[in-house]
Image 1 (spheres, helix red, strand yellow):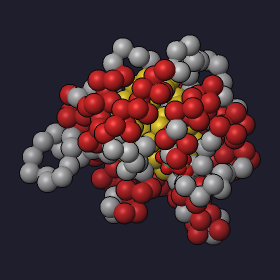
Image 2 (spheres, protein in one colour; image 1 turned 90 degrees about the vertical axis):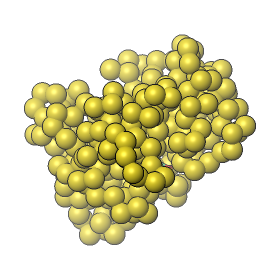
Image 3 (spheres, helix red, strand yellow; image 1 turned 180 degrees about the vertical axis):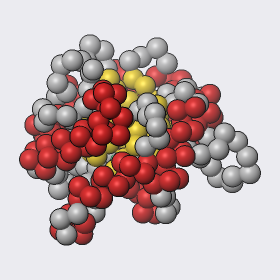
Length: 245
Ligand code: 13P
């Protein structure tokens, strides 16, 4: 399976900047050996999807509500994302777990809603610095996986250690190898053979200079990139570092 290189634009970019970034990514997207995905702020998903239609770059949301529709002020549903051209959605990002109080149970419901709408979920897990300092990182990630993934699960998992997000501190290759092997074991325990086919992305201060080393680690199925996805050249350089299929 090809590696997936996904850009999480978070809350960055006005309309013109989002369009320019999408065009820049599309301009270098031909002939890569990986899958490419960009996840703009919800407001820009429709416009970016129009720009990227017919290119190899897919579009995703950064969150969705667990219901298909209803009285949920300020939210968007997976069906709405799908309707405007998104085929992916990031769920349970640590910024949503922390800033919006999202629980594993809620993330599982959102994941189910995404799958039902035909939108592939990328479910994020990862420990905080305190949890790692206390030696609890695998326990925490194990609970997150058990609580956040519905059965069956048709999507991707992203391991994003909270302490590596936006800090410039990347997990070492050894940390990534150990955690990705643990996640693979947990996925197989939860889903049997199907657990072998679930891609596990690494995220947290991925950039062009460290991408090749991180993407070469066993059980790393791609990268979820924040800051470095806001520059088309840097994002494409990460994509070129992906392992060939
Ligand atoms: P950075 O690449 O900016 O560390 O962000 C990672 C992330 O949170 C992607 O979802």
